[in-house]
Length: 352
Length: 256
Image (cartoon, rainbow over all chains, first blue to last red; front, side, top):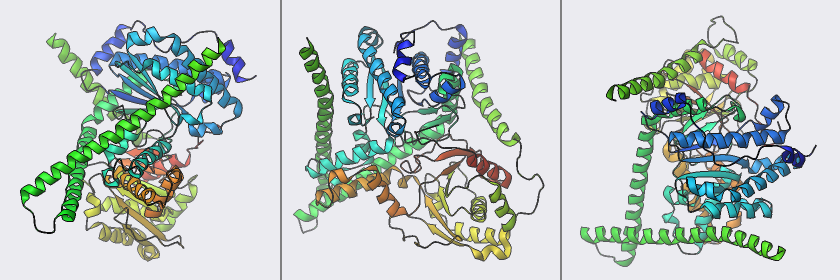
């Protein structure tokens, strides 16, 4: 039986955003958890949908549908706890290697879910949910790209909660795309190669609008990252959970938060040290570059005040270059989505 | 209300540290599959243990996320790995204390003699302290060559920054096209610099559930296991983790 038929026979219409009544037990647990720091951004590797399907004698496609259902629930749990940003690994570039039936089924699920999203605009706006789709979207079928672009454009002005869906994504591909962007900037003369820093590369990643995840949760008992947010999670608290994703419960989430709180001090110290080191390297680089420029201009010795003002001047110019580069990058990315959305409008107009 | 707050805080404290205690107990109480007899540790006994493992990592990474580092225990770990047949070892501490440690080499030599006796001289150990600008590893390796790289935070993201700069320069002078920059060319570049394959297994020591900056690019498919501490590390706990590693099956995103 093909994946398409299965999805169509599934009875419930599942929403992206929901609000259900909480029991007093859950409310109490949340109050206990809020005694400590609560993560602001959690990433999920929702592993185990297919094994869940096999275990419960369901079609594979139904496993993915249950997975989506669990995602919607998890978003609600997160929102109740105060976790306002969630990133999920929905489809890896490696997953294209699966059977055609399964890939087609997943693309169809994506089409339906993103189409449903457009119908829920009021609900999404009411809860202030912004949806971003991160990945090498050029690898997707054109109509899925259009559905994605519409979903992203529809919700981009919301600011209360953010859901990042990694689709046609791998971390190495993302880092590679950031390296290409900076190489392009250097080639065009917008920035210099010495301007490339940890901060700049981070601003070129698909996740540039989000802070790094505080916590990464992976289900189904696997102990690896599988090419997901490798750069961004290097200081995240890692929580490897034994259950399959559709069996993930609110208690697993609470346990993850407790783990995050235990690790908070050690991790924050490491992050702080990293930021101090970044600043030190940047200052060192600005000084060396400024000195180099000064040497090329004057052959005689120069006063301390000359050096100081030269470095300040260089820093200011470097920051301007970087701003121009990043603004240009933002423009090109928005254009990508706007062009796709226009495609849809053209298609709609032609159809009427 | 004040009493209620205090109550919540107390429950929070108990839950936070109680769960840690329970998880540590689980590590030490797990049943022991391999031989129960305490027999003397030497090259042949360790080597025969390696034969009982499903698979051995080619490159193992040890992440020391604790404050006090014990050279003796680190040297012991290296000698065990050597005897088991693991030829690539990474030692990571965030601040690079091991890189600056003058005693590690002598400690390794001492432990080799202590544990392996006359077999100690069989192995050649090379220590590498710099990620870039290191001597190329010998192409024709023999099985008794062990390469150990000492890493710190600067070898992680910062090495990717360095890579981005190199590629940008190459594109600017028309040596490279932008389309030539791909995950595999980046990988080749990094491999060419370090000569170490990606780690298949990483062992975290210390009660920190994070990689804290360790080689983000290279840990794409790495199995991440952990032990509470490396101090007074005992052989059985170490072997138990290698056994767990051996039992793992990777699916690589494709089929079940």
